[in-house]
Length: 221
Image (cartoon, rainbow, N blue to C red; front, side, top):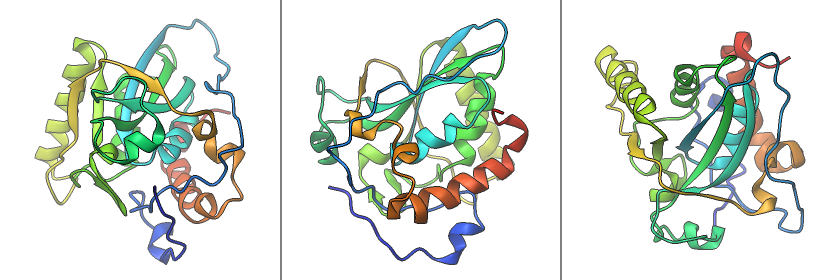
């Protein structure tokens, strides 16, 4: 099980990439509808992206902010166990990563813009780790759905490494998408349903506020 560390240093408020602590399940009895459908404007051409960047609670709420994102679902992908449970994935033995599957309108937001949000909202240089979350289930990963996504992800990753945008090489895994298993209901829309919980107040909210400032021109109304 993940654990919450309640002491958060002031540096959380000044950096976009936050080493955030483990996600503790605080409300298993709460049931939230999966999907988090959002309104779209104009012609809709839907596509899917699948990203893992540590705890899926943080990833979910970040991508929910973006104009053109229609749906964000937290779940598991990349492993060899069918229909895994949260407890199984937490062992690190299933091969699955915690991910979010993002449905987006290509007429409002591009896959490249989603990649920018992905790489700027976590530390892609730490192998199998985000902050205190350690294990392959927390790896930085892009599961591409087609050849175009693969090419764009690899090109962007290469350019970031060449530019020296990060102090260390990016270790983000780029692999073909195979299967996605939605997480249990209590994981869905977590921040919106639990915004007053300590983890949300101390870890997610500062990260979210910084993200919204950096990406303010891309936010939904």
